[in-house]
Length: 243
Ligand SMILES: C[S@@+](CC[C@H](N)C(=O)[O-])C[C@H]1O[C@@H](n2cnc3c(N)ncnc32)[C@H](O)[C@@H]1O
Image (cartoon, rainbow, N blue to C red):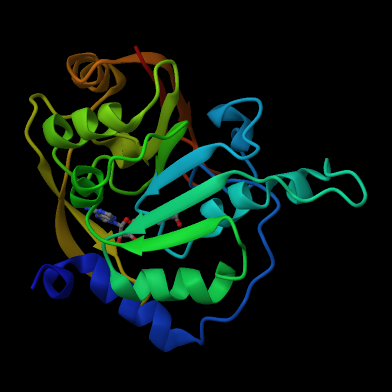
């Protein structure tokens, strides 16, 4: 039932109907914001990701996961004849259709795995430690932080990062949540219809409180605007570390 009632299923269904999922070239950079080409890239996850284990929660069609898995080629740093040593990336997404699209796009990359499932259930079922965990408008902010953040902290090695971007709580003139509860929001489908969802719409201070409770510390909170909506920030990008 969950996969049929989530708006993300409708989103994936429309995308799939719009065109076949084909092999795609690996994107040249990671995107964290609503404005492609702006903001940091993969380096925010750490200086040397080669062979590191990295987990994406809510990977969608897998563009960022593929970029990380192919990192030395993407950065042009692999020497001639050297085996590429991108990160070993697992992308998890709630919607099986998204995982199929991701596999069609990037399934050829050896060190990249896509798994269908709820982020929290994946974390609960696995005992794999990770060197970095991230979410780009993915599961962080869409799943109760008091459950998801401890689950993430449990899987991070000490000192390792959790990085996530969420819609900025001030976007389009809104105000951030005044308490710890989720709020009604909506997702815009490819055909421009909106479907309702709930979101934990915190400012950086409230995220810091929840991170601390989970045994993580806030290293930075950055905000980004995009070209068409300069008045209000659109993206909040949080970097935290496991204590
Ligand atoms: C806005 S899309 C972002 C996709 C991708 N990170 C990107 O930047 O292209 C949000 C994705 O999060 C997934 N998602 C939502 N809730 C989730 C959950 N509880 N566990 C795993 N994935 C989830 C959705 O299925 C959707 O693919």
